[in-house]
Image 1 (tube, rainbow, N blue to C red):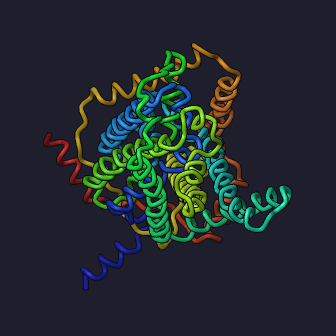
Image 2: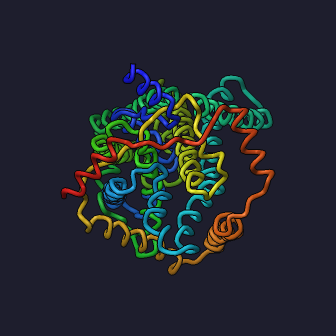
Length: 449
């Protein structure tokens, strides 16, 4: 009877559930990474390098740098044990150092991500989805430009509502859907790769054999070449962003990174090779949608699959972007840096907070930090633009919220009423705390080492 009572008490704990296994964690990284970039704007790296050989070198280097960054983040996860990625890392490193300046880095990160970069990124991806979803329909039904434009807006709104509904209703449902979309988008990539291999078999290797001929890489174009490649790898930290929802994190965090990032590197390199079997360097640079142009020339009757693949890829990416954005918001709210209600959990969600066990040599995060500083400063110094000031303004805008509401902790009664209303309407409550055996085990192992 005592054991039954204890079990019932445990089951009433309200926490996020650990639902993502190894396969789902790998799919989360791939789904977040593989958006529209490799299908639409793969020529950017080629434009900034000037040659096929150097372009492929940049893609491999970006994959290696992403892998090192992900391993560094996984190492940080062994100490923090909290979802939210960089936000939780900033909190862990700086929050206790100074009352005002300590929590500021984490707040700026969450403010810029939640208010600017994540919504803007999701909007761009959803609009890309709408464009490629409507394109085949427009061709078949002979839509007028005005009708097509209206349909794109409606499809984009419907897609956003669908993504929100999926993420709101069920984490298990999200996992199943994102796994299916990952398999579908990898299949679309394999279609391009197989089509390229067939073209090579047929002897269409003229563009590839030019090697490093025409390389134009300079100190000013090197960062832009890396940016175009690293943008396509954005998403490598996805499994760490939701570390509290990963099953067996001490194994699956590391394994998901080691499996997903090299796989994406190989896919990107092979897809670029495939494109170059039928597109010259100038054609690949100028093509508005590289994969679609490749499909038209190389895939014949299978070419309509490419726009469908882009639509699937962008929808899945937007789905994962929103999933991660809610975890940043959750982590920031839990630390008192956003509205408290955003840290509440559905009363039907039960999980434990996990930990990760691995060791990364200190030289790796130092190298990643050095490369990040170089890539950040070089374009500002070599070619300053007004856009840099706009980005700085976005960052500085965080101070207007941080000082009164985070540092001075001012509260309005209207916010408390809003929190209570949401709590009643959605059936949510603050996440309950209890001892997590995984974290305790990791702590003991780290102490022994």
